[in-house]
Image 1 (spheres, rainbow, N blue to C red):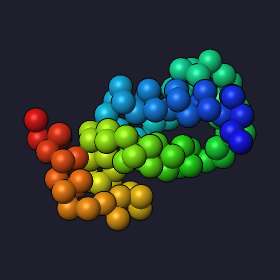
Image 2: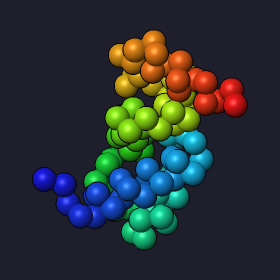
Image 3: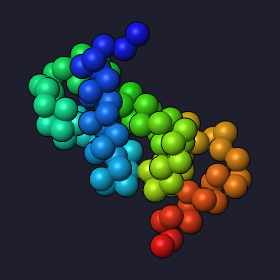
Length: 96
């Protein structure tokens, strides 16, 4: 079961990723959006790469195409199993 603070931090990271159309959010921005100390972000997620992984998985599950496209361009491991049609949809959003 996730703690309420961890969930709040993840939701803040998702808002940051959507706002910048990229999964590569930074710890301080996430902490500011979640209204927690940056150390608490580290406590729940460790390295910022763990937040990135959660964000990419969330973006794939929820069809956040711009975020998925940035993950594809960066060869994020979570995108390796995307179907060709999903890849096309995501990449089409960055060409607009």
